[in-house]
Length: 183
Image (cartoon, rainbow, N blue to C red; front, side, top):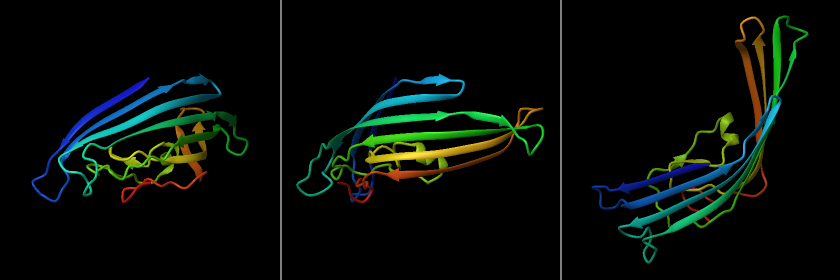
C-alpha cells in the first residue's frame, strides 16, 4: 500500500499569478508476486486533487475545483539468461516487459498549474502511469508498453558489462489532458 498526501500553499507577489492551496492525495494498492524467473504486479491507484484558490482560473469559474482519477496498472516481466556461445565467460540476459495502464480522462481545465511540467522522455518513461511532473495534472492514458532489455554479465566478476533496452508505447486512445488545456 502507498499513501502520498501533500498540502501546498502557493503565493506570489505578482498580482497576475494564481494563488491558493492544493491538497494532493495519491493512494495505491499493489500485489507484487515475484519468482526467480519473473514477476506480476497489478496495481490500483486513486489520485485526487482539490484546490482552494484565492480567485478562479477563469471568470465565473470554480474557486475550489477538484478532480479524482482511478488508475489500473498491470506490470509484468520475465527474466531469461543463458551462457553466450559467441563470447566465452559471459552470460546474456533477455528481459521482456509488458506494462498496461488505464486511466480515464477527467476535466481538469479549472485546475491551476502551480508546479507541473512534462517529464523528459526516456526509456523508463514508457513504464510510468503519469506523463507530468508536479501535482497539478493527472494523466489520462489507455496504453500498452512493451520493452526489452538485454545485458552481458561477466561470469567471473558478476559485473554487467553491456546493457541495451528497446521499447514502445502503443496508445489505445488519444490523450486529452495537457498543460495548456484539458478535456
